[in-house]
Length: 114
Length: 113
Image (cartoon, rainbow over all chains, first blue to last red; front, top):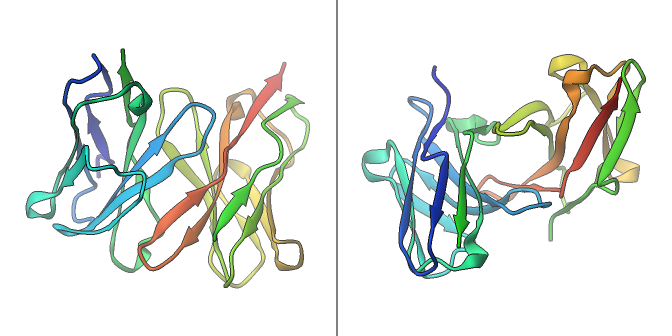
């Protein structure tokens, strides 16, 4: 069990560029979550997958955001036409089966939009 | 709507002193409650959780929390803090069948030597 990993750990991009983040959950965890954490705030739920199906999307997830989880393994979160307000820490978590609330978090990807 | 309030943004205690971090929640049913800790550059680590049963729950690193339904509270305690406990602490409630977790804004703990 190597834990949840995220790549990259840091990303600096210019406004208007597209960025993509990757999350690798703990092996055999069927649920995967994305959260966003801005400075001075707790993490906020963005979206959630069970296997490859995206089951819930927050209103925070504008149409510039898209998430995928092909084959129910790793997941990607893409932000198109980034804005300065997108600067935040993007956290991924995974869980298994009936212990769905026992979410294990990755180290996060810190995005800075200049 | 579900929500979590952590009234203290910063808390400073001396090493070896006792600690209590406050958390109040709003949720219509029996809540699932959590405390997470986040150190700089680290992800969130689950300290403890309450689902049902005994209202005093024990966690890792010597932490405990008590669920008080009448006060809608889930305060985190530790009898003697260590310098390594300096971090940000988040209280959270599990909400809805999509299993998303609602977090409070966090309390940053500072330890005086």
